[in-house]
Image (tube, rainbow, N blue to C red):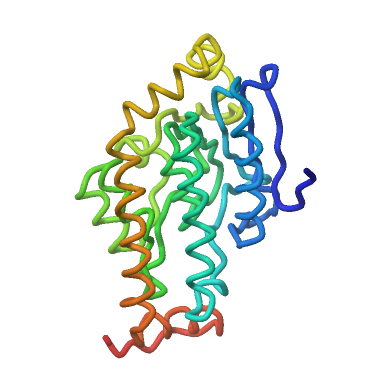
Length: 259
């Protein structure tokens, strides 16, 4: 299948599959791109030799996140369904995952990286969940962040919307491998993959991933639908959530009513 918004690459004789978000500079995770990612993951379901799925952004940035126009009240249900379907597929596949991050990794982009077993980041990487600035919230991050970096850092990132650099992300345990100055992130990731992944059995890696991530996967399958309902039934029925999205699209400051 040919893709327009992503690029699929096979490395190390096909046992490592890289899905490149190929819509620079922002690599926005719009519904069309998410559909292509899900199609690519469907194809991988039949490839039992795959040991690792890698996500990377084309250009200087990983991803600015989901499409803001698709966050509007009339589009939110469609957007969340498409976005969350990707996580459910990844859980079902159980293939270990890695994100190679350069530049901005925000919102839904950070949530995609957050899902991955491993994050490799260079010194340009910036991570953030800025949804609260628009008056909304990040459902997948609300489920995954506390389990990845602890409640305190999850509260910080979700409630302030601030971004953190690669060094801070490494310090709090979000990033697994920090790329040395001047080195290429994919080259660093490749060396790590050769040492730690290629020598393993693909089937054993999947089963071990199901075991070690059992609670993590269960929380996604059980809690993410609840977060989606909270988003649609409570948040998007509020004045401020709609005001925040509309203000961003209209390039103005939001006028909160606190309701």
